[in-house]
Amino acid sequence: MLERLDELKEKAKGTIFEAFVDDQVENYKQIKQKELKKAQINNKWIDQADKLFNLFEDVCNKYKPKIEAFASQVVFVDNRDDEGSVSFAITNFKSETFSLQCADLHSLNDDYQKLEDDEYVETLDVGNEVGGVHFFFYPGETIKEILYSETFTTSKAANLFTKAVEPLILELFQKCFDLESLLKATEQQEEL
Image (cartoon, rainbow, N blue to C red; front, top):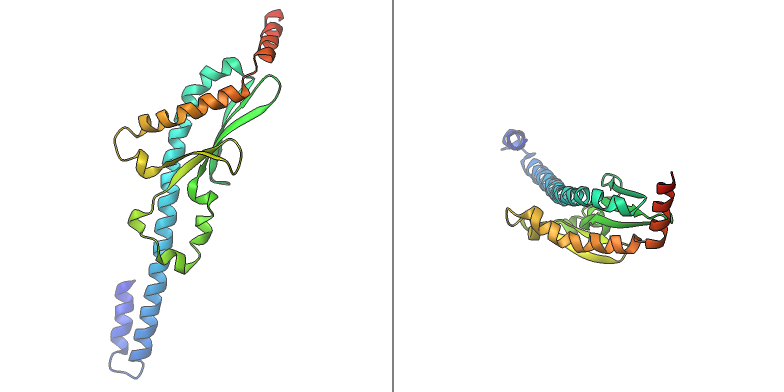
């Protein structure tokens, strides 16, 4: 594309159109550079959140079989395409569902919408823009934030992430655990 723009400038050189064409070509380049920068930042945030979502899914899959004995249902729900989030949900024997939600940091801060603002984009440094996720049991109440740059600085990303998330899964388990209804459900199964 740059070659074609340079060709246009060359064709206009020495004519009465030279200044106008030069001006239009430079404006066009600036617009395209902003669009490219927006796309690069957008893709970087999505890719980084996806890697963290995948780690969360791995941790949930590790703990799912261990929790299933104590709950009526344990599921990992993937809404990353619709809402920029995933969740690990446990339903106890009283049919109460509790979930630990993991959301793309930038989607919940409306940063993707802010990318439409040229002034906002101009202040961002593509190289230093870092994505991440945050965890919550209830919307608006972040309990933990994990940045991509904190996790993927070493080859032990999975271990670092697991250590950060395990206390949250324990807290989720404690929220849903109901011994009385678990015992009743166990008795009913034994009677069958």
